[in-house]
Image (tube, rainbow, N blue to C red; front, side):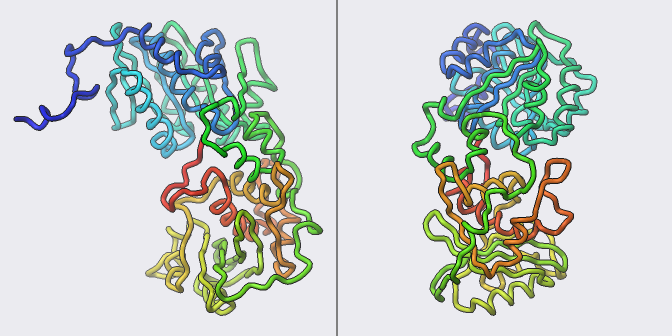
Length: 446
């Protein structure tokens, strides 16, 4: 007996002609029956050449994007479309995972090719449709393609100029099929690409659909409350309510207030208290923020500024706190680069008995900033971050780091290192989109 005879047949094992392919109308009916109202508006609109669904975390953007791509595929049998994510890991971990789950759930036969570049072929009774999967920064590879539809996911996380150029290239490729459309789903990230395209400079051929996180009745219990607890009020408008807000003006950490967040008296920490230490790596300028976590609150008790190298900052930490259990939250790049011939920076820290808690890669800058801001003041009006007056450099950096002309936290004045070190801790310990994740995860929830 062949081993294949022992395996239950699925879409991949079905040979051509062994079962009846679904019609495009049957597929559309399956997709439409599971949509939430805001997803239905997005998926049913085929009149606007540029269409966007902008909403808060957990509102079902990726589900809507995949549903939209399948509906457009059914309307354009024999044609090619494309879907773009900001990065290759997002293609793999978010888009492809959702696409596979929904194609199986709706019993839509498909084939998948991973190399040289990933693509799906959806099989209908009327014919085949191909969906190309690409990253936004590789948009130049669209040259020469004739497409019927292009979808962007989370394009607001990409540099505004790159997103705009990628969209313009995509629009120029819409030349085939019965329904030609550029569609996008994203969480609003300030007055960036989505705001400019779908609100500020919207044309007659453009439509913006908005939704709140709470428009999804299937969110995990406590999800919304966790957002309210961990994000400042301004970000709640964006990340919960799906509104465009100005997130990049003036002082980066404008929720920090010396009178409210600096302790009047020195905290006492005994030798049995586990310490949480954020570390920012720079050649000849290593910086560390030292603190303790108490429930959902954090207290900075000390800092180390401008240490010469990784080994010296590790010795300084151990010299000050010889008996405490120490968890480190370093710059994730320390796992790749090294300051001596045999060990990476993180390996050097681990050799001193420190327990590494860093992710495989650093969070997006805005996520790290938002996690600190939410600790200073969340949407419930709570302050969950206090700082010892010993942390003189950290206090200075929090007060003086500003945004540059590109809307990014300034790194030229030198006020970023301590703030980055603090952000590595708060992002790993208190960000609701990462809490409870294992060390080798860190996938942002969209």
